[in-house]
Image (cartoon, rainbow, N blue to C red; front, side, top):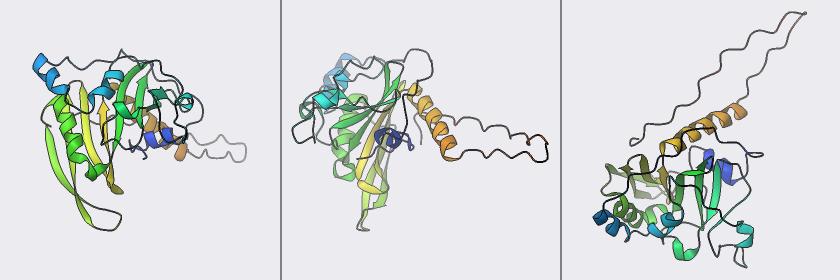
Length: 244
């Protein structure tokens, strides 16, 4: 499936960004506070735990082999954790073997957001309305009850209305959001983001917008200097964590 992170992840998955884009310098990634022993025991029951044990948000992204060396013979799956080497330095597709990925995950890849070498966010594709309760239960096993949860009616591709779940969790500084895709509610996502990931996403969105809508420089006439360019728009600000 295509990761719908403000148009940013889609560009990364399709290789739209040409060349490597250096992530801006920033403070080391803040790690989520460790959970108490009781919560840790509950977290072991989460289907996301095997995945997050390898890809721990706030830690360096592990050194992983190229997914070209970890594909199954039919090319549709991976046999071990791996990383797609194509793309830019901000977004990396990480292959997750079947034994370590949750049943509600759609496909073998998650999208990792990397600030320098720190893993600051993950986007996990899901089967949307078809698996939303299992996905929500897995997140709640990790982070407790959502701070907000609501039902959203969405039409499927046949026009039939489907009730989808939109929920958010806070585990400061980490924010987690689960939702279905409006264009196809049978696909969805879990976004697990540190503040650095939101800043990087906003900066990347601004960069993509600039590429799609380049300012047309006025031509000089009669030896006169070209008209001065308007002041550039400020970069998009990251959305407030823990709200939508």
